Length: 142
Image (tube, rainbow, N blue to C red; front, side, top):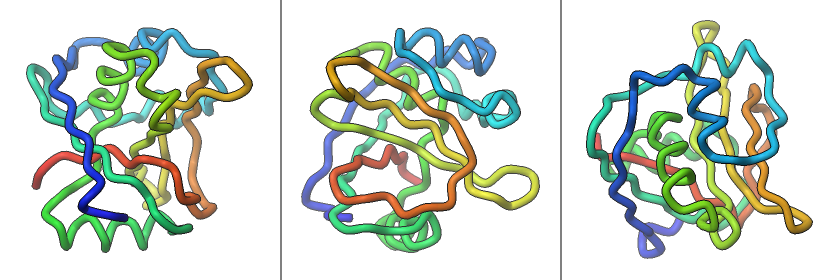
């Protein structure tokens, strides 16, 4: 993660929506695990400042956690990531982005937005692989 490559977005987060409504509001084709979607953390509503840092080398979720925590960040709640991609649909075409969290069993889960083969997509699943360079992780300040 390169702290010099940071993009900031200020968005309004509607925390009264259901997790599925958050995904639907991004207007993307979806590939999801409904169990993961149903357990997405909301975070706080209202105005939120979201920071996007580029992953500059393949990194696991645990490696990312160590990296961003040392820089004073925590993962942005999925509702915040959804709000950014709802407000600027083309953002993911330039900056494929994601956030992640641990579920009740301590397993990493993620919500990602991207553009592939001319179409916009969103995925919400359990994680396990490395994030390749080129993805942008959504963070908020501790």
